[in-house]
Length: 117
Image (tube, rainbow, N blue to C red; front, side, top):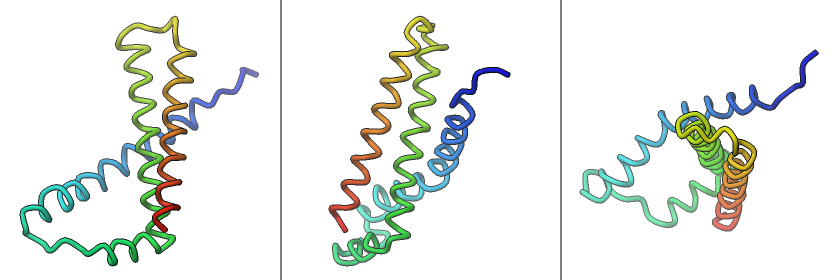
């Protein structure tokens, strides 16, 4: 029996992050980056946004979007460095660096959401 790796789990996180990012981020960018600044729709007040984030389900969705998007980035950037730039000799450093940045970013997202609540 061969040695087990975390590769299938990382590809699962990559796929989930890609799907969530592709579905939700364009909508959020359009709403908060285009429609509200131009005035097509009224911007929600701070109390409304705080009430939205106070809902545990909304906080969980925002956290999942943040974490999975970071894992998607890490996997894509890792393979860009290893295969695209031919840095296979440094794969351990690249793996540790990419996933450390992802974990730090995930913890930072959780802390920010916790402090806002």
